[in-house]
Image (tube, rainbow, N blue to C red):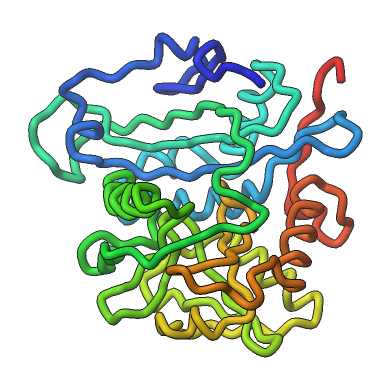
Amino acid sequence: MFDHETLEVFFDGKFMPFKNANVSIANTGLLYGLGVFTGMRAFKNEQGTHLNIFRPEAHYKRMLNSCKLLRYDDFKKNFSEKKFTDTIKDLLLKNSIKEDAYIRITNFSFENKITPKLSGYRENLSMFLYPLGDYVPTTGMKCCVSSWTRVKDSSIPARAKITGLYVNTALAKAEALNNGYDEALFQNHNGNIVEGSAENIFIVRDGLLITPPPSDEILEGITRQSIMEIAKDKGIDVVERSIARSELVFADEVFLTGTGAKVSPVIEIDKYLVGDGSVGPISKLMQETYLNAARGLDSNYKHWVEAVEVKNA
């Protein structure tokens, strides 16, 4: 497993050693959480000859939208989709990465000022690699419904990955872990179940796959969209609608999705077993198909991955 602190990173328009990529204690992005990000994965293929970057075009589009919301204009000027993807490839190649890697990309306010605002500040795009296996358990999680609610769209929109918003995530995650659970589930201000602390949620009832709609103030996740496409290809009906808390008790299956989580089945919520307390067939099918697609093993989803050759494989 590689040590991310010994690698090259992309910072302020160029590649440099990790230890040289620093910000001031007066940095506005640090002080006020002014930034947007996306997390991506590069999965090694079965032969070990290539790393497959998962859906870079979708991540680029979301970064564009997130930057637009925070009035960051430089990202669009400086990075086409091709340049964005090529920079990620260069990051993997420069560091001779030969294993699964998480790619963290952040665009943040890069001024040493004591004013939280979104205009007139220089931006900085940074990229670094991190060795990330399972972000949460993937063989069956135990979750709780958090006492913290998801931030409203009219306060901080969850559909943009804004760095400061993740204090909300950290509070819910800490509560779950401190009480012996693997993960937290968020309700919105209407009491509907909307997300995990950093994942989208799906439930299965009578063979129907159900997930909250964007109007419930969720992150419009790239893995979420991928699972919806996979389900439809498998002949499984998908419905986007609100999910009441009590439905979690009646669900046959529950699973969470995300770049970190991949596809992670849930077997218990608030001490209630989900179904019979084991990983269900639809959860297992989605998990296996997603991983095969992400590793470039499924010809139906080859268009989702951008291959990078592993040197001296």
